[in-house]
Amino acid sequence: MKNISILGSTGSIGTQTLQVIRNNPDKFKIIAISGNNNIDLLLKQIDEFKPRYVAVFKEEKAKKLKQKITGSHTKVLCGISGLREISTLDEVDVLVTAVVGNVGLIPTLDAIKAKKTIALANKETLVTAGELVMEEARRNEVNIIPVDSEHSAIFQCLQGNDIKEVNKIILTASGGPFRGFKKEELVNAKAVDALKHPNWSMGRKISIDSATLMNKGLEVIEAKWLFDMDIEKIDVIVHPQSIIHSMVEYIDGSILAQLGITDMKVPINYALTYPKRIESKTKRLDFQKFCQLTFEKPDKNTFPCLDLAYNALDIGGTMTAVLNAANEELVLKYLNNKIKFYDIPNRIEKAMKKHNLIRKPNLDDIIEADKNTREYINKSF
Ligand SMILES: NC(=O)C1=CN([C@@H]2O[C@H](COP(=O)(O)OP(=O)(O)OC[C@H]3O[C@@H](n4cnc5c(N)ncnc54)[C@H](OP(=O)(O)O)[C@@H]3O)[C@@H](O)[C@H]2O)C=CC1
Ligand SMILES: CC(=O)[C@@H](O)[C@H](O)COP(=O)(O)O
Ligand SMILES: [Mn+2]
Image 1 (cartoon, rainbow, N blue to C red):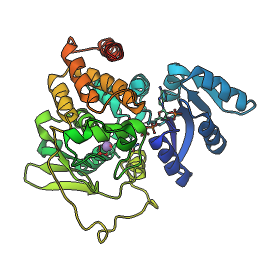
Image 2: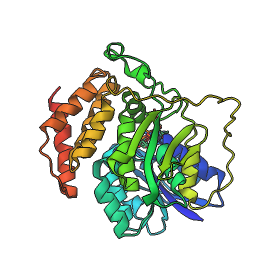
Image 3: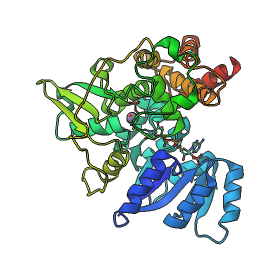
Image 4: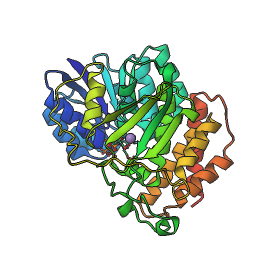
């Protein structure tokens, strides 16, 4: 039996993680869950999974929840301290980081120090502070198992092989809902259309990131840190069907790929059961339906976010934290119809140009760069 704590149990990854756990009550037990706004769903989750703890980020929401569950055996925690507490509980074996945004960073670092296995969906953690997080994981001999579909694919393709024999890794990108569009067609692109991902049903922030191709940029950075891979060895190819989740090319020319339907329960399952696999009732890939697998070059001119991410990674230090913070703030504004599609890359570029780089940052430097960038973005509108 593995004891699980989830940061972000009310979101897309969080609810799918609970589905995997619901399907395997003999293998997993929920110890703690957490959310931000969605108290109604948290109530249902408390009722079903009877966790010992629930952490709610917003204080007023935590108070409301407390009133609704008086007499329950579930303890309500709040704020960042609540997230930190449920990440380090003695009885927890695995922390699933399914929150969106950089709020995942500090609880994840705490969990690593407390020697918890990390099932990592929250890519912003590695984009913001990948070097520090991976150093901490190595120091504490903690496994960070990717949940992100591309990284789970790469992780699976690496099993039983020597990482030194990898020639490159190839991240597949769907191209998003605006694949094939030209710049002039996207100037006035609306968030409501950007949210319509062709293949995956996901949270709002990552859906916008997919539409700008920033998601792939963030995933390049995530791959660099997870697999300790040089930037020159990380390629992106557009594969509109999202059937091949990613590939690894070895020095002998062999390419290993992981394929499957677009269902995040598959990589979540693997992250929770690694190194073993367990029976799952997810739909199977039917090759007679998906008879075409196609590939094309990413359109870096129409979608400048991908190059911005490569540049930030190449510059290094605090620059990827700046890229991430600027992107988070701008995506929120775009979702609220406050800015236009190209304000996202344009303002990120400005924030990166303005930033005073720290090449070998500590955690405080990273937190400061993140904070200053958010202030800069918000002041500039
Ligand atoms: N969805 C997917 O298929 C994939 C997602 N990922 C990554 O996984 C992470 C989660 O994505 P996704 O599930 O789509 O996102 P969602 O927006 O669906 O869910 C986000 C979760 O985080 C919680 N949350 C939001 N803000 C805060 C905060 N300040 N403090 C505490 N909790 C907070 C939300 O709570 P509430 O709902 O209660 O407000 C919710 O539980 C992201 O980093 C994303 O990039 C990676 C690969 C695939
Ligand atoms: C499911 C998942 O892992 C997402 O990151 C997904 O891959 C987004 O798709 P694109 O960014 O390729 O459009
Ligand atoms: Mn992904």
